[in-house]
Length: 73
Image (cartoon, rainbow, N blue to C red):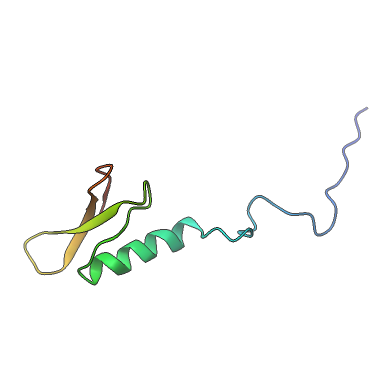
């Protein structure tokens, strides 16, 4: 028979969001805020400048990184 120890009360979890690092949704929301304000934002992949990309209208439909080529749409 194998006995498993229960985790300690208050033990840190990998999913607590602690440690000072922003969560993925916070990072992406920040990038979108910059792009919708018609200004470059930091690429969430490499940190280089991501520029807004436009469709048929004046509102940005996404962004493209000048460093790594990543796109956000």
